Image 1 (cartoon, rainbow, N blue to C red):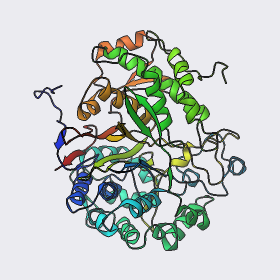
Image 2: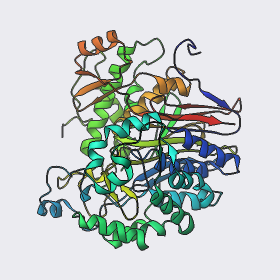
Image 3: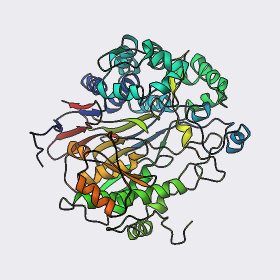
Amino acid sequence: MMRDFCRPGRSALVATEAAVATSHPLASAAALEILAAGGNAVDAAIAAVAVQCVVEPHMTGIGGDGFALYAPANGPVVALNGSGRAPAAASVERLAGLGVTGEIPRHGAHAVTVPGAVAAWTRLHADHGRLPLDRVFRRAIRYAEEGYGVSPRVAQDWAAAVPLLAADEGCRAVFLPGGRAPRAGERHAQPLLGQRLRDIAAHGAAAFYSGATADSLVGFLRARGGLHTLDDFAAAQDGAEYVTPIATDYRGYEILECPPNGQGLAALMILNALGGFDLSPSVGDADRHHLHAEATKLAYHHRDVLVGEGGPDAAAALLSAEATAALRRRIDPARAQAPTLWTEAEHKDTVCLSVVDRDGNAISFINSIFHSFGSVQLDPATGVLLHSRGTSFRLTEGHPNALAPRRRPLHTIIPGLIRKDGRAVCPFGVMGGHYQAAGHGAFVSAVLDRGLDVQAAIDQPRSFAFNGVLEIEPTVAEDTAAELAHRGHTVVRRDEPMGGGQAIWIDHAAGLLIAGSDHRKDGCALGF
């Protein structure tokens, strides 16, 4: 389907050898530079995300977590879990004794699990990279130390976070130079972050999880009441682990996700539920948003009740034919329903990127500090901004996602991959906190049900059924919104875009790469 060139928008990138799609143009350029210099998809992905840690500081950082789905041109898909663990001393009981009940506060030390991103990067690079890390980090180090120009969407989000940043001494010094957020087109630098990247390039993960940096981070967190120890950081150095992807069939394609503790299982459940309905191009927008909302509510209800590192492996049961049939029976095409479990007896900020290199290696990579600017706690001695992923834990004994020693919390960030006949055809990702699993379902349906190219699929107006309301973007038509309300949805129209997305379609027959990058962010797709 050809887009209307009289209307604002962007075309899909078409390339023959290599392509990259990220949420920031400097990250896309850095990845393309690495590919042109002989690096592979893994090198390019790490180069891009390192740059994003500098130029999109509200979205990601070395004080966060990461996941990857890597599909070598010849070999099985590699899934990497680079999410951090709670301190060994942490538990529901221990926090209750400290007066923390109900939920974990975002702005305290208990919101910080030991960051897993650096361990993930270094392990993936050691096993699958080609160029040395100092070359891979070159652009990120330069932008951190010498400065970069702040882009428009980043500036908007930065300005919205000023009251939070002003409350933390470290954040105030780094992110509010002159007492305010940098404006679009102004220069910003983080020299200490550049030094951390230099250290990691020279000494690997040990430069983050031991020595002076770990000493400082542990001291910083403990001064704020944290339970972190040097042993916790040392254990995390080799903490990134390869896991077996989970998958489902959708319209004859295999959709792969990382297993829990990520929410990729919810994305697959959404697709399984949608697979029982007609979502072809002739289906109206109200029907499409309604079915997606109903499938999302069911999948997220199961995620919240049954999924977590502390529970049994739920993937096989929740992706079974029996569970899928039960989910579909619970969807009324004409009316919004309350979500229920499938058994008959009833019981916010990230970067994602995609790269395909000239050898056909493909990767979907995602890195996050969770909320905007994470926990809004920056160690002044190291320049490391710490994430807030610990807020995802439940403080309920016995829950699969309950806080426990060295446990990983349920994660919203999920890379995605589509395969056909055993070959990768589309690394993709959708950012946006809890929206991500729903976003995966919408993206895959747009591509495989409607035949949209990846850029057009990313561009589609979005909706998200969560916490009892159906949020819709401003671009959803008024008559569609009215029909959704008529069907029983509590419709809330957002005044800002929902998430972001990056994807590359591999057309093996034509020898082409078709890439898309979300207009909701500053980024772009590039290739050669």
